[in-house]
Image 1 (cartoon, rainbow, N blue to C red):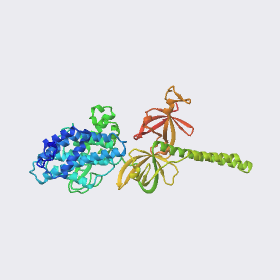
Image 2 (cartoon, one colour):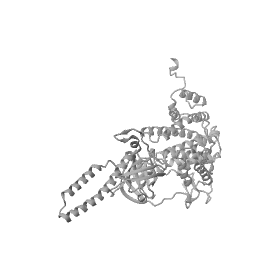
Image 3 (cartoon, one colour):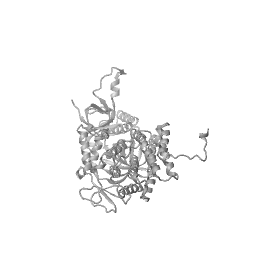
Image 4 (cartoon, rainbow, N blue to C red):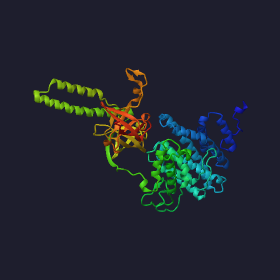
Length: 560
């Protein structure tokens, strides 16, 4: 019983008092619910920040030890987020805030010790400063990356903090000191300069066009590549491509044309980095992936590394350029999503167009009636009424929403939408579009996203077809299962699906394509497309674009 009494002379032990207290506390945590380890560490660090604890060498040693121990649990939490791109919004929000909270508390705790070391050059914290600065930069990089996942942009204060920390490492002469950041994680040595450049280079490809998984994969590769770049204090034309001002509060600037005047400029090029990227790309495309680090042997690595090769190439000719300029406009755009909904809307347009053509035939019949009888016969009127009734019965349009378009180009739109009402919006989501003053739906995909203000988001939309065709897709190589339902083989029923055909004349890419479910795609697969009673035999070729559950493939006529 006595051990449960709160004795006035018994001091409460803070886990961050010293290394021994941290180890005892950690042992206690590990005997409990290990799934909430990072939350427990975050709470302890937060208590340290809000308390009156002094920034001593022993407390810093305890903090760094706990930080080391929690890394594996923290990495597991991050993987859980990245490996579930379609998780419920509530779970996504919970994981995102857990990850950001630990990073936030660790940054503020380390900043307490950095401030002490900066104000007191004789502080015993001094020998640990290089690693403290590098770890703080690592957590700041985590915060930036996880903001990118939600299409958020770090504030000016964030960039100013990063610049000041790196500047401090320069002033202390430890910016290039190499060391292992964490003892518990197998990784190469790093430095303050490496961590700083990694943050800056990830910012250069944050255009709103990469998924969280692609951003994280790039970050993993930069962890390997960052030491292939060197910052210099003097600008050299033809060699340097990027600039930062350590005295400012802005992210990295890509040098194009005149070089801005800055007070504490740091410059670097990408020649060596580009060589590493190209070498990795050649290995992946040449079937030598096993010779690369494990970080490169991931699904989607080949497609991503092509983008990075172009983005970071020192050769301007290699860099991606817009095919057509954006034109500022102001109009409304009806939007709907979901493969089945898009199919039904496009099918409605196709049938309506066919009905119009049939209406012309009816008008000709009316003229013939007038010429022959002097009036329109009852038979012709009944035929018109029947066609009109069938049209209304078949064509029932569902729900859609309306966005504001503020720019347009050949092959796409830029639209602004409210975030709260569109929590379904994600990169590579297939959408149907209907611009104002038009009466038919287009097929498009979300290519770019970014937050533009309170409660609003900007979406870049790429049009796949201005006049798509809804088709039923039948696999021609499916075998009979031997089990029939009302005379129809079960295998045939399962092998049929919905698709949207994109004729070459209706898309900017000028290729015949077919949008189908990812599960239905296989290269060089014979298919039959059926639309309004007409059949067309095709064979699938390479993938033109893809999303989470759909692919857009090139198709060729397969007459044989």
